[in-house]
Image 1 (cartoon, rainbow, N blue to C red):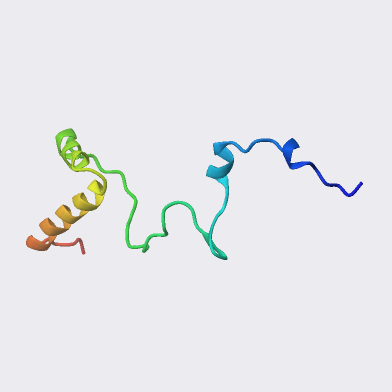
Image 2: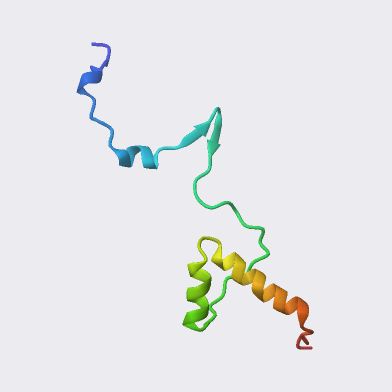
Length: 84
């Protein structure tokens, strides 16, 4: 016997198999997930009023980036003293 298995005997592949499978573009493995960041951001916990967060979230995907941009615009238009 040569170890051949009849393809008709193979189990049917479920959607989960394909969701977990590696994806290639030619010979190049396509990385899954979010791309690596620039290292210029800091993760923190900040408390905002609920209506402010709700308004930014309601604006759709990218709301955190827009919130960051709004804070940057405020910072650029105000002189802020840094602690010595």
